[in-house]
Image (cartoon, rainbow over all chains, first blue to last red; front, side, top):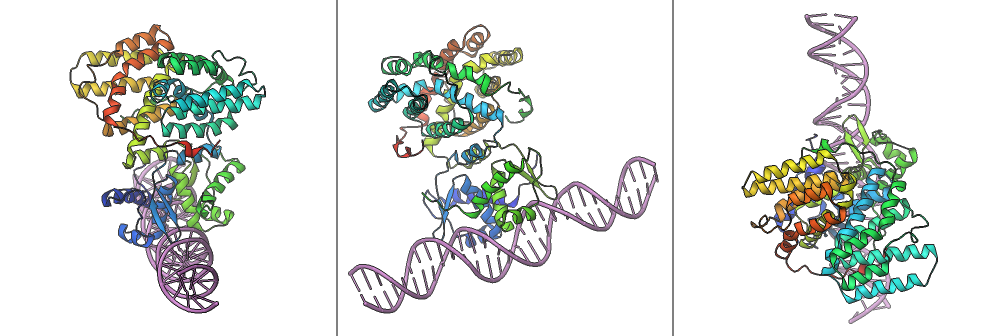
Length: 237
Length: 237
DNA sequence: CGAATTAATATGTACTACAAATAAATTAAT
DNA sequence: ATTAATTTATTTGTAGTACATATTAATTCG
């Protein structure tokens, strides 16, 4: 365990503390760099490093002359950087792929909770488009749109943002097999039908079957994941 | 849309590009700051800002004299900072709470996929401890341990790390009601029984019932979430 | 009164110097 | 000769200063 935080890291926290103590609200402007550096008792270089770190987390935005203003921290700010860096290892990639499957199956209750006409109409329209084309690429796009709409319908903004990230990720990293459409057990149409007049429980079961190709795909997309011992991370409790 | 990235941000990406182009592996050491600054054609100040940002994302670790070494980017590095900053808005908090429920219900298939004796034994032991105490605080701890074990059993390391973060988050932000244990429909014992000789589908249904108190809690923990329009984020596709 | 120009100001970048830590090398001691 | 202690060299960490650049605010001119 490395206990010694670098000064910039300490200042990063100090700034957050300073913000909450002073009762700053979103949109408020922080003191200018020179002042803040003096207030916190560090050089401007260190302060700027700390600010830079806060910026990547979405805590602040800075503009010339205008200064530093507080923004709502986007949970997926850094996430995005990592995903798009291409340095993600296979294991993490598979982990995320699995998580998405879990979410799509597990979101059923929230779909029924936030069910609205407009979403159902959107889904209906996508299905109609699907029935009008045979182009594989087009069908893939529509498939993504269908599931994307479900995420939106869940009423969970963070989840929707997360899903968008994963979409771009797996579009490049985990291309589909050509026969995915044929082998699907449950169609989008059936899913919509259940959404309209079924139950959350039924939807979960149906969605699990609908995703069967994804489950099967995993073996080929992410071969023999090394099952490393997770026991070593027991200290946190 | 602000197109103008600051130099440090550009350098941040350049470094990532440099790493992948040079074929650096995890554990490898990057050129020292002075060299890297010269290679990329910027001052050391800017380079250090970029490195600092990469460090918060878990891409690198630096030590005096030893230099900068590549590490596996932890997806939740920045995540953690945000969660522990206390600046998370209510909406995001509720979002995360919901996501956790989705995951617990949706992870069923993976539990059955990675089912092992030792995990089942762990769960059994927790249940036995539960039956031996009446202390509310102790029961809460055991409950967390039970679900935590399930996450571990899912075989998804990232998910397990995520869950750990959320645990600490909701321990402080979303305290339980006192009657949670009494109102539970499905017990841990029943869940374990299904895990032993049931199906994933049955487990999902059972888990949904088991979590009924959580679903009910949400109304009081996170009152009337503002349903903001998510339509404005349509540009990404 | 409005448009164009100028001035003021805060962030962005660079350079230099030195402090602090630590790995490597060297010396001293058993 | 091997180990322990000490010195040295190197690299990150921090500070200060100076200037570039962009943008808001003020001022001037038509």
